[in-house]
Length: 83
Image (cartoon, rainbow, N blue to C red; front, side, top):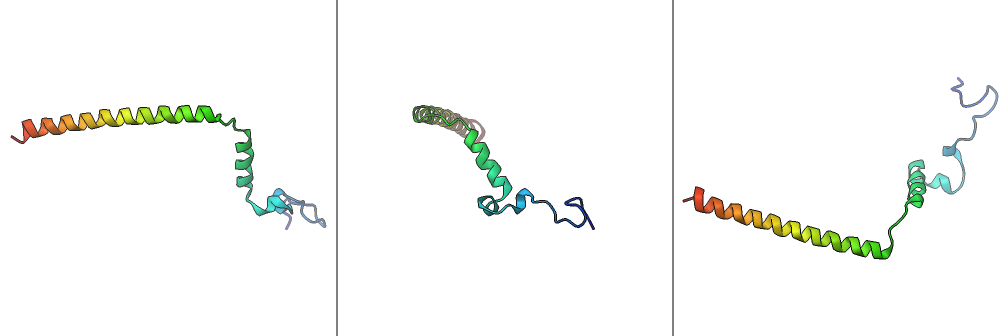
């Protein structure tokens, strides 16, 4: 039965899955990921440090705000509903 992979009497064509070499040691999707990661424009060290500091400041501010809201609701419930 011929499934379109070659002509009758001829062996099937070489496909990317049958290649011999380094490519055969990893799945195709892994090679695609590596290829895409080579196209990425990575930030500089200074940009990474600056953005890390920004994230830490925003996360700390959000934590303090949400902690304050939590303390307010705790106080409100204890002084109004539990009395």
